[in-house]
Length: 124
Image (cartoon, rainbow, N blue to C red; front, side):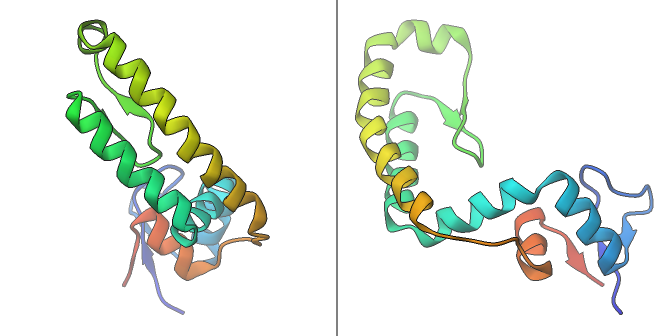
C-alpha cells in the first residue's frame, strides 16, 4: 500500500495519507467536482467552451480560474461593460451545449487515479 502526498482541503498536517484516508477526504469534499472535471474532459463541446472562454475573457483583460469562474476587479468590468455583456451572451450558447453533453454522460464516482489527477496529489 503506497502513501499519497496531498496538502489541500481536509489534509493532515503532514500531508501523507493512506489510499483509504485520501479517498475518504476526496469523496467527502470533492466527489461532485471530480466527476464534473472528468466529464468536461470527455465532452468536445466543453473543450470548445473552455477555449472560447479563455480567448474572449483574455481579450477583455479578464482571467478565470479552473472552474471557469471569472477573476477580475469591478473597475475592469465597468470600463468594458458592453464588451463583457456581449462576450457573456456568446458564451451562453457554448455553455448550454457543454451542459447537454455532460448530462448525457452517465458517470459514476471517481477512482483513486482520477482523484489524484484532479487534486494534484502525488503517490510516494
